Length: 263
Figure 1 (cartoon, rainbow, N blue to C red):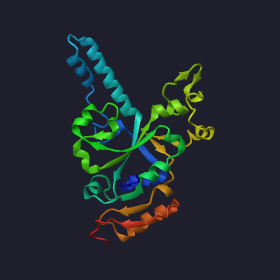
Figure 2 (figure 1 turned 120 degrees about the horizontal axis):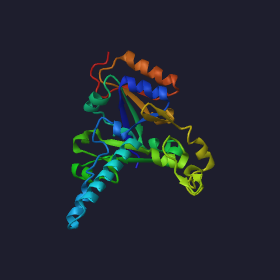
Figure 3 (figure 1 turned 30 degrees about the vertical axis):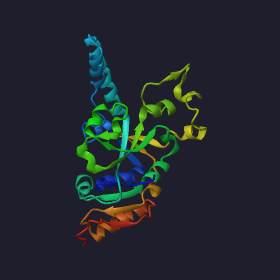
Figure 4 (figure 1 turned 90 degrees about the vertical axis):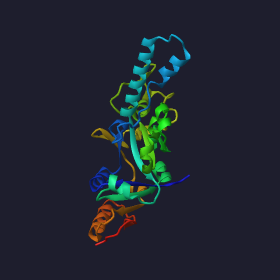
């Protein structure tokens, strides 16, 4: 089902978006929520200890260590683009994420369909669930579950798995996986679901930027509307409109629906 989505951006991040000509994704480990992607990595060993008498303590400690290492690797190797699910504006979201900035309006179908084809092979799109109890056990889907205190953020997420993409395309500087005597990205058995043109484009639609990644999204299609922060002046609106048009983006530019002091 197609859903309206939006992103609150400070003025600085809005300029970065236009300069990047695409979407920036940050690693899960670098998000402001320090518990992002974390779960109770001891729950498997505790279950074993409850079910098995005289379970080997060293083995259980080793299992906990392995689970924690897997969790931290996933947090460092998964990249997020986080959107607000809905079209209604939130004063709290303006305050927390869009101070003196803009709101970009789009929809979930466009976010999915305009993602460059190579990147779709290592990406997921889904609404976030807010559940404290579930988060503790979310070992298989840790990046789609958050604590209840974040429920007002109503997130819809694009999650990118860099390791999966590296195995398929060879992008990145991680260890190379071999299938026989060939790197995985040169093995037809691994890349069977990707056409030659997709493979050729795979390194052109993604690039590193600092500790994150930039996807070459067509912003002219993705951005349906832009709204300015509450209290923005008419001059600011014209400036934002000019910046967008300079990038070939001719979408509606409006004041916030919460605006009470347009100059």
